[in-house]
Length: 492
Image 1 (cartoon, helix red, strand yellow):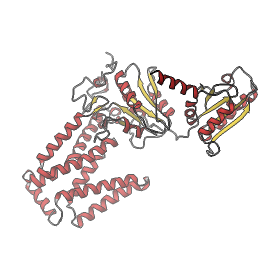
Image 2 (cartoon, rainbow, N blue to C red):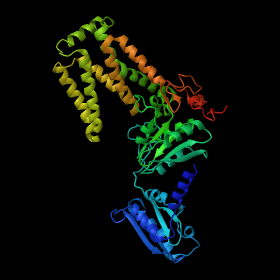
Image 3 (cartoon, rainbow, N blue to C red):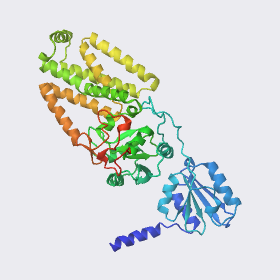
Image 4 (cartoon, rainbow, N blue to C red):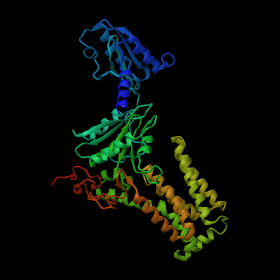
């Protein structure tokens, strides 16, 4: 043990900033490939206040050059004072004594200021990262409510949250990830509300990530989720600050990162993906009607194709005779079995959907609509598929669009194919068996320790916001499965 402590002490001593300016400059030149790396600059000058040589080291693409000139260089050349902190007119100045963290400051948009015969450096924040203006969410439609969406700037995203949650207990805690490229992950939560064990679980998963770089939230999600190979998502991804604020006020933890125009919300349940922020902005009856439509859509998109295969192949006696005759007549010239016929149409619909997503925006909608019409009509006329298969596939595909969350949308689309394959063997019997296994698997999932179907199963005290929501003035408690420090939302 003493040997490890001795080695650690020797390493810290070796990383101490030298009082020799030239040694410090040579070290940082070597670290950033000075001369080869055209983005790295070093400015040398003599400070007026102590008549010593100083050096400014920074990356041109990350800093505000006007701010460097007006707030650092001019004061040092013209003004006198007791120290750098009294002369430089920038608020954020950190004193650095160890060379191991200098590189992190430089890559974060800070100027490193070395002084000759001074065994320390100053990290001055003059970062100027380019980002777009706050605009409307692109993937989450907004009918009622704020039109703001997260952008790629971490500071702007935090300000959007603080603008809606004006609470002194709102905390933004920084965690670092990445060995070669250091990135900050901000944990946003209400200190006197969030469960401490949940907070420790989130911190632990982030600290366990041992990898060169995690560039954004989309990659971070895959490192911290409970089951990376699971069919079901267990972390909610949203572009809307108002949605994030809703969960923070309930006791959840929100994760933010630079260069990500969204946030991650943990923990979540199945109902978090099924619900929509618009449900709460709409009046009580209207919001619940939307949820009812989505419930039917969830059934149609996962079960209708598989149910048709099961009934037509194994349980034709359950189909009305007139409809059964029409189905038989329409399939008279189709050379493929029913299973292959519906798989072809489902795959064609997914192909059109994928082409519409990848095509440039002005052409995407046109290609999707025209492609679907032409492909369906041509397939029917060529007797490749029957008309009823086109109707069922279209209904199944259109119903999936009612599932607004992209992660859950992929889940139900893949589930649809699983159920179709299961219905081929023994009809309704095999379909129900696979559905039961699918439901049992979903019920076994947890998101950061929270059961996936809570508060329905297992039962927890909550505001009864599962299938349908109550009027807002009757929602008096927070979700019990989060074990928040304060369960009550409304005081009597």
